[in-house]
Length: 119
Image (cartoon, rainbow, N blue to C red; front, side, top):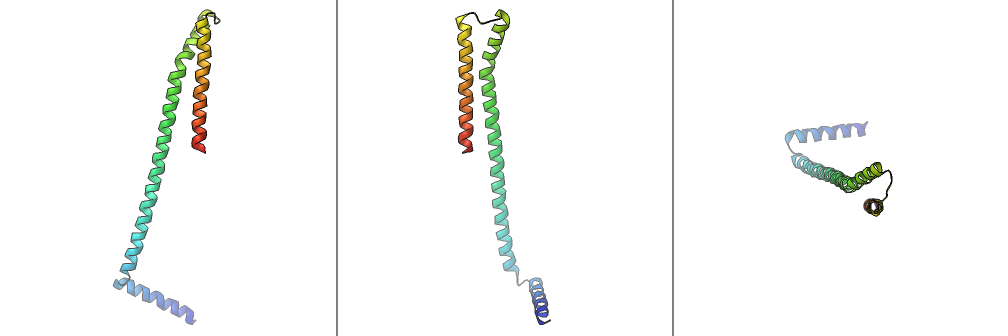
């Protein structure tokens, strides 16, 4: 019973002191600490968002580069195959080999960049 009373009394004393303004310094210190923690967390969250936006922009740029570099040769090879029904000239055969080489190099570069970023 005594322990309950002393806890109750200490709670009342703390309440009276805080109402009188005696605990203001402690509360201010707690508020300052809390503010610093919240600001640090907000900064970390903002950096994470910026990182995600940066990764999204790089991915979009890489996709557009691959599309614009690989797209025209694909179109030309398809047009040549449809028009002539087979690759007859040396130029068209070299173009097909070049297309596959460039595509393989771009794919390798993208895969190497992804693996390097992942590790």
